[in-house]
Amino acid sequence: MRFIATTRDQIDAFVILAEDGPLAPALREAGATVEVLPMDEQARGLRREEVARLGVHQARAAVGSARYVAKLRRRLRALRPDIVHAISLKSGPYGGVAARAAGIPMVWHLHDHLVPSYLAPRLITAVQGLIATLPSGLLVPSESVLATTGRRRRGLAVDVMPFPVPLPERRAPIRDQVRTIGMLGRITPWKGQDVFLRGFAEACPDPGVQARIIGNAMFGETDFEQRLHEIAGELGIADRVEFRGFREDVYAELDELDVVVHASTSPDPLPGVVIEAMGAGLPVVAANAGGNPEHVSDGVNGFLHTPGDPASLARAIRAATADRQRREEIGAAARQSAHRYAPETINPRMIAFYQRVLGS
Image 1 (cartoon, rainbow, N blue to C red):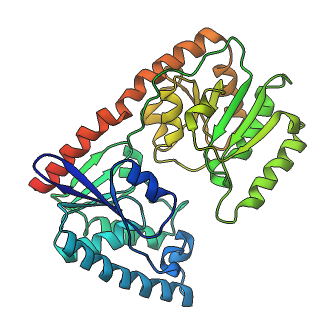
Image 2: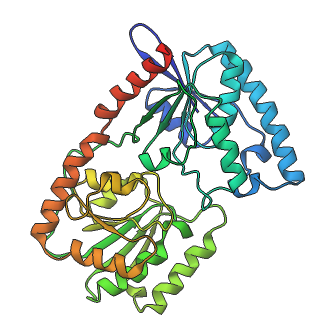
Image 3: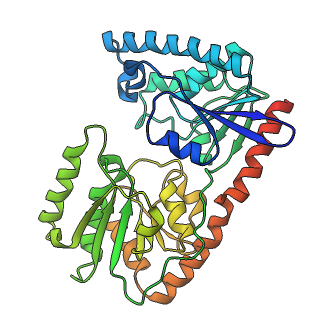
């Protein structure tokens, strides 16, 4: 959750985190004031697929959340920020209730699709009701997310605003021959790493071309990561697939790739890795769902494929790897498109949105 306190000469960011971790020093290094206001572990650890169920765990989490709202309200009354900016599906409800109780305008930055493949139907209804009630402003990264938010009350400030993604100073190299096709992101079934492996095996029989999976499995999904190793073996490409694990320097990884693949099987609001790869000037093959088709034009600044369809992905990979000149042109167009997501473009829009919320 982020809090913005506005003064005459500057905007000060005061960030409250529900738990300590590596994000805190990174935020301080970026110039924010950071405070850890611990949340009860049962409330903080409740996963979205557990929320709609009834049970002792859920009841304890609800009590913990209520206590946290009261604690957060007291802290907000002491801080008196101009705006509360809640940046997640979970922080929106408790941040919104606390902000409203403290009499402070709140912006809910929602970056999740409210769809049955992601949330239980009754939970979707509850979140849509909160969106219609709590915030003074609603931000979403794509029109596809906005379409799932339900009926919004009159007077609610709304804007479609992608997250800012810094562009690297230089483009990634476009090599004469494609040698490495990569996929970046958390390893989890809905991200479609299995679809990537199957599409890669079909599109790239050349033993000189490697696949690279960059990212870790989280939240008890290591079984899926192990299954990916098995799939690579079944496809006969185990010696051509590298599992790199988590890497902090994304652009250093992109420098080593020739084509970047996004293969999510569920609609992605607007994958940061797609924007990062576009900003690096690389050809991107992205799933034709969610926010991607709003920003990637097939054959113009990237390539689109049918989500969950390895054959469609294979066709797109073949198109992306056909010749160097095409990759050069697509990558240049992608980098040009990515300027619309750069901080120097998004940040003034964000400030203008805050002013709009305060003005209303």
